[in-house]
Amino acid sequence: MTIARNITIGLSTLLVASLVACQSTPPAAQGPAAIELVPPTEAQVEQLEVAQAASDAGQYDEALVLFQDLLAENPTITPAYMGIGDIHMVRKNYEQAEPAYARAARLEPNNFDAQYGHGLALQMLERFVEAVRAYRRALRIDPGSTKANLNIATTFLQMTEADRAVDYAERAVALSPDNGAARANLGAIYEELGRSAEAVDSYIAAIELMGNQPPLMLNLINVLGKENRYREAANTALTLIRIEPTANAYERLGWCSFKLREYDDSVDAYRQAVDIDPSHWPSHNGIGVNAINTWLLSKKRDEAAKVVAGDHFRRSLRINPEQPRVIQLVLNYQL
Image (cartoon, rainbow, N blue to C red; front, top):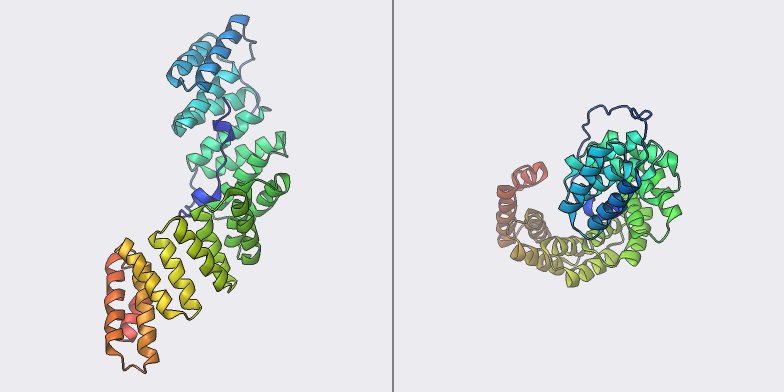
């Protein structure tokens, strides 16, 4: 079974999530196999094929029993450990997958799939430092592996070390220019490094390859904004709304419209967002900013606008009190 070992971590799934700090425990040394490999018998080879076929057919419980029976007879059959690891990865049982891949990697240190699978399991367990080491071992075996370059880059990004990720991410794109996940990953890394123009190009390429995926489109809107390309960002937000009319999508349209000084459109978009999700505090802030802008443009004569601003800023703070800039606005303007 190769499903689990073909998994790559695309930024579209991670990128929109908060990046977490890496905590890990020292990995076990990956040295030569402690046990001399015993070639499987003909009967064991046949049973291995049956187990693999059961796994490929989704009969995971049956396959696990067959793999485990094989290892009870011969604990040095690397493909059996790999099969067990693959099944646990598909089932998202990462804590059980990791030791199976680790054992396979110790038995056969030059087995790319074992090293890569071990890295992937460690990454999913957020044991990032160990994952990087495993991916590096895999890359020493096959430096031209797109998925290993892509996933080590993503791991560094999860560790908030985009500067260490970028070379691997660029290599993944160079190896597989038509790989949308690699393009998206590179875009996220460029964005993290403040290289917004390059991030725009990478996200556009990823969207061309993968289609209009909402997380990618949100990322593209953000970096277009950083490049002051607000009209393109607004158009992207409108396309996103047609695909997935979420509070986040309308909030981004409201932000773009405000930057374009299209204030009525901005307020409308923010109100659409809070209609969809009354707890969407960034959109309450957006309504508040528009209202305070109206009040200031009226030379502070439009008291109704001031009331609206105060109301929505307070709603936002009730939902998310940790907003010092909003608190300062409320205090400064006595809202």
